[in-house]
Image (cartoon, rainbow, N blue to C red; front, top):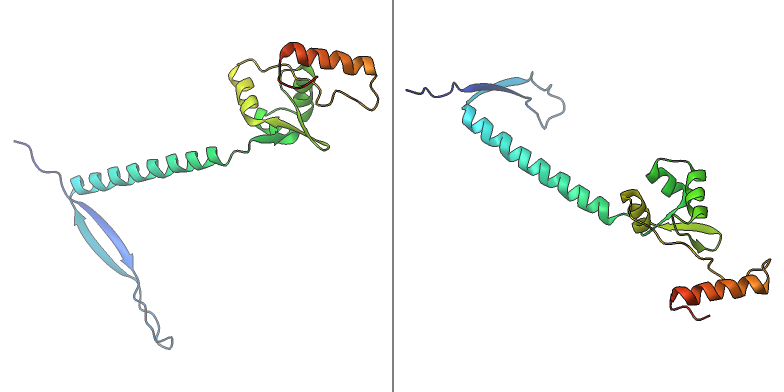
Length: 154
């Protein structure tokens, strides 16, 4: 014969408040409740479910808030590496750079692919004509673009 679990006693302290500020507030009063363990267990399960749902919502919101492009310091923070390491990855072609004026940007998706171990394509210079470059260099870059069939007119 199975006996029912003993009720758990919970003590809740309440304080009486008054609307009249001249009268002092009375001392806190204790309210004692006897709650069966099964009810406490059900409450704990509901709280656990709601907390997990909220955490999942926060994870989804955090993923949506991720920017499409990162600056070099942001990419370094995500890699937990130095800025120089990010510049080295850009120079070696393991990551592609995108220029926005003077800023160097890295695609978030590409950085995630690099972290997952997937290959990231070799980067090409943005402009085929450089102020300091020669025409021969520009021609070689145009030929490389044409051979890769990037859809960029040569």
